[in-house]
Length: 134
Image (tube, rainbow, N blue to C red; front, top):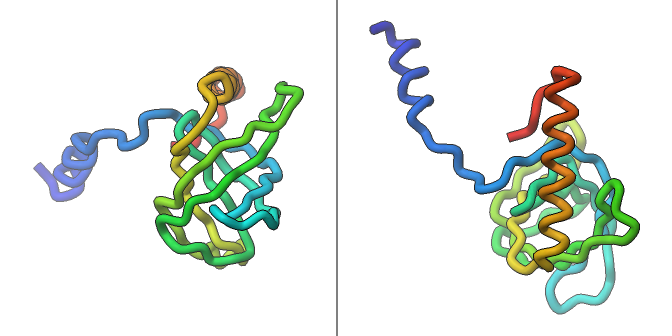
């Protein structure tokens, strides 16, 4: 077996880490740090039933707890969730900080709306032959 095939074989054995599929979605997100009432503006680049990627102008440390408020396309109200930063990096191309947020407190109805939206997007992208975020 060639080295390239060995690497590909090993990568195929790595389990998918996320419990929920994510799709690309660009929307404005209002967020506050736990214990701070002043909302700040950010944006999302992907969303799933278990979390969201938040782009901000500020570097936030891993483990920071945030309250997030954002719209879901097709829903007539904003979703409000609590989440914790589990991944953080600086995106030099966008000149913004990217934070992977894992939801820690979400209304089950809101989570179901997110899952429903993501499933519809996955189906739409499959028909349109677009890549799905992962």
